Length: 468
Image 1: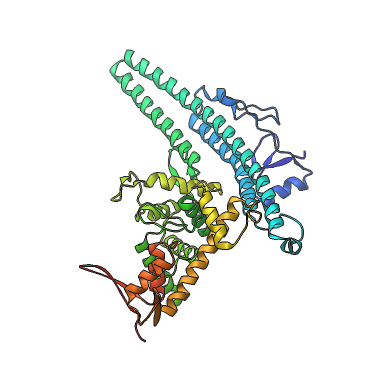
Image 2: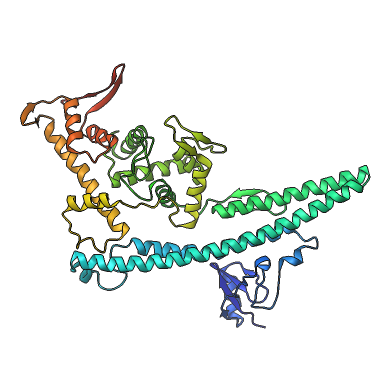
């Protein structure tokens, strides 16, 4: 007799029994035998009985697990179901996030769009952005609803364990010594099982990929499907939300919040590997992306997993357990919390880091620098503002580098021409002429031009480029 099948969460299952079809050849055999693809069964939202399916009439509620069946397996099934629930949501969120960031039309002729006035282009982008944001908001609401139902169900499983543990404790008080020892062993084993459920739940909530053995309780991470670019994007989202001009409280800068010394070291390693000569790069958006991507690739090749890479990025060490406190600048740090944010972001495929919003003063400055009117920016989306800020910032860096080349031999200071100016005078003039650039960015511009910075007993000192 022909057996129908359905698709759910990227896999195919046999209708009725819900047995997973393991490979394309097996699926082909179902089709050859006369089976056809049908709609996936609907999942009933019934709180504690979240495992109930409505397609075949079979019910597998949690009540059936009370009579001594493996509750860990029940919890594992619930967690897997949650992951299956969320997979379609995360896929949709990724699509709409990409659409929200799109600077072109979603459909139609790109040539026609390019020929429109900046105001009309911005108006179209604004409408597209509003549509995408509405979809993302609705998906987030649905995600919260599903998470709540899963939370209720897992609490129900945990409560069953609590009842059984209390019952064992009660029996233990009335038993003889031999029976007490046996009951105590059962209680300890049951508590361990409950803790395994909660550990697996925490991993699922954090978005960490794992393999959970319900018999032994062993948990193994599975990072095989994660790409370098996904790690790069996740760290960038958490660090700055994609703001290449971001500044941290401890001196960090850029989209990936590099410390100045870290940037000098890593950009030197990058240029040595790619150009055969170490040099400190100007931290333009393109250079920040290139250095971050290269460094993360190197860490992956050294065998570090994504959670360890996140820990290295945040603390310099792959070990993050228990690392919380306050640094020398008085800034609180929480390395495990940071790792959890990055890995959750990594698995969800959607930004869960900082949301970058510009103040009205910042917007006014950008309009003045770019010569835009209120009418020009009337329909600007948040992404339009960030793109404009990044464009102006990168142009400022390039302008500073060009100016510095001409200042090596001659510079005009307060109306007076100075030949062969000292490195300190050049650095001072950079600070005056480019106030929007950070100290670390100006140092990088100097080093890019061949100047070197050395540390002495009296502080740091700049040296002129070699005449060669």
